[in-house]
Image 1 (cartoon, rainbow, N blue to C red):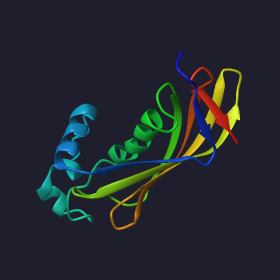
Image 2 (cartoon, rainbow, N blue to C red; image 1 turned 180 degrees about the vertical axis):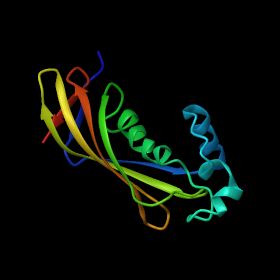
Image 3 (cartoon, rainbow, N blue to C red; image 1 turned 90 degrees about the vertical axis):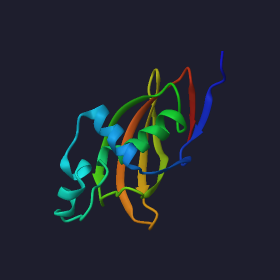
Length: 145
């Protein structure tokens, strides 16, 4: 049996991604969200943004990427997410996503972890903030703090 992953409250993890047109098109294809603000450059020029923007949920999904792959990682169950979209993300923006485990409550079968996620663009501007909860089963995880 695989060793349990040890996690401490306060642990952080990061994910980096430059948003491309291909990313936005693929996300639209998966979700069916072909809103003109994302897909139609001529229409987007007439909006307050002046250009196409990435889907907000595309950007916020990087928080889930970290939680499912790194912190805490494989074997977890994503329970909820409260997201605030602060600023638009444009094609070509490089997003740095940071997730931190802020607290954990022990339950019979695992820990319920609270995580804070922040997505920041290359100008240091926060574009997304989120608070999430994730179940970390005891057979895979041990939480300290």
